[in-house]
Length: 201
Image (cartoon, rainbow, N blue to C red; front, top):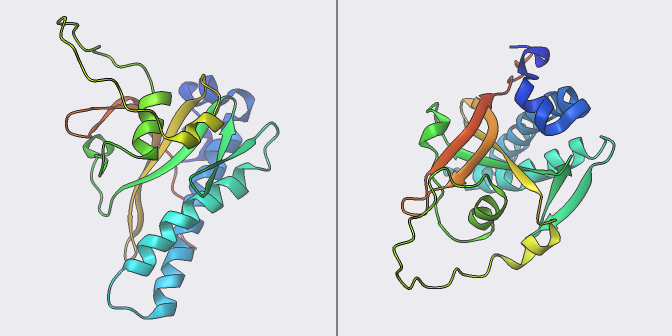
């Protein structure tokens, strides 16, 4: 799939005239993050994949913030020791949801609390099925993660969801918007679409 093919009406609606450039930069950044993590794993010669996993988590944020910062109007925001890019009122947040090629619709957060969950809950799309008001006294919602105060209240989140492993590399890469299902931590996608994964030379 070419970059032109990936620049869909949805991407243009979200990012406006920057859509084509954002759609080209994001996959390249995720690929570089994988390559850095893979290099770190090979460098420490461990039998486990801890170095790869921890390296990938850090590198994905570093690569995206560095790559997207070159675009005009990009705002860099520090969230819990990681820097994220906000473009056209949308924060771009990476999320490795699987180690093998499974549909993004199977994505489920490890925890229903914490920054990532709060980010999706507070800055994701409005729920498609609002909770029924049964007149019951419900406990007050927990305060959102303190770092989210650094984002404008009307900022929306674009999730860059990908599946990858040290051995196979990036096997699936998509982006879109989703709400967080409070019961089972699954993501309810309002929109998601594939991004092109650059071929290795």
